[in-house]
Image (tube, rainbow, N blue to C red; front, side, top):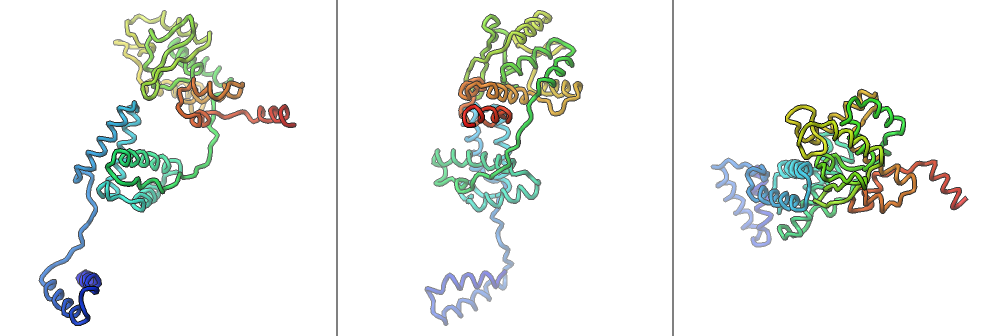
Length: 331
């Protein structure tokens, strides 16, 4: 270590010293360093040791809360960015593109993560550093030169008409039946479902007002069958909770996201149908709507998407209809 350090100093001083002076400098350094133990400083620091890193992370998360991001999204941002800062071990202003590329490569290797997972991490980091750049905390976003990671487009399953009928038959109470009918008919998110109050539902118009991402309100619609099941469910209740869906037992609390997800999975297992979850009803509604000819812009409005590209990811157009359309318009 001492020899490397002496050579480094000599190289740095070559432009200022002649050959004899450089040799004399080397002798002096050898003599002086002989009485010292030299250890290379570890430049890495824990995120806990950098108040600046913590402050910037907290400021970013606060900005996301103001934008209306859900608690789940905030938690995912926090965990993802925290792991990166702790793994890279540098002050935010010192983090380079190479540091982040190495972190993503190491993350993939250590966690055996898929390309999709790595790209999700990249997107979160890009959002973080873009915000830092916009707020003038850093000069340049180091994620900008890290390109989107190409992933295979997997055609995700929807709930078939037959399986939906089986799910209906497996419901042993009116609440669960009303819940899956509303999910299937409206395509709302599970977070929007649990936030619904009875007063949000306009039965005569067969519509309800939901609060989506970013605290944006929109109107969604349900069919006559859903209306009947909802009214029967409300008639069966003996509580005064304003929530549309509540637990069976006292004190009849509002159902939460975890409660709905757990119950939907249980219904799937009881009906012997694989991978049934609330979001699958949303994807099914979008796919069926597009498959039956609803304009994509209207589906986008129903789902509450800001970008139409997001809507397209939910939709899986039936291939047989593509064949029929080809014959109609081209063949």
